[in-house]
Image (cartoon, rainbow, N blue to C red; front, top):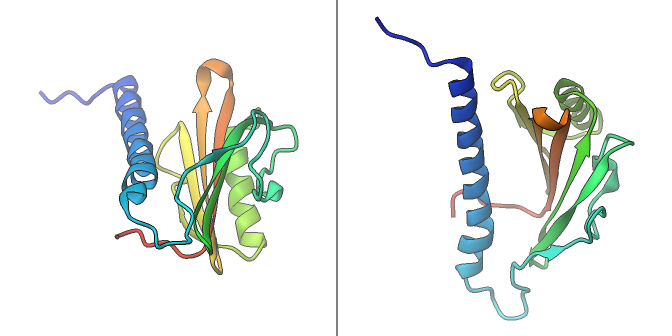
Length: 165
């Protein structure tokens, strides 16, 4: 008789998959892109970290929708004269679904085009990716059960990005 994996096993496997995806994304941004030679006069793609409890310079503060959020920090990366990334993370006491709906509604009501959201796939996390002209934003929300709060990472990108180099 086939036995289905337990809920705990599915959650652990899902969490590991999410960690691997995030690690791969960071590897791509920091290892792969740094190996490419930048033309002369173009800054290298090295992160500049914001002081703890502050957002990085140039990060649009309006993308932190929870007024009571506890800012963890962030970083900025300039890939060239017209391409950059600003990322900030924070903790929130709002529920996973409240945060997800706030971001989905914010993007839809502020002229952004929601390109992707995973509103129904995992019980412990949600992501939203939206575009507006040459700007894009990615929001990852993870339920931190042992702390009874959510960890939110918001990345704001300027310029166009090729996903397949």
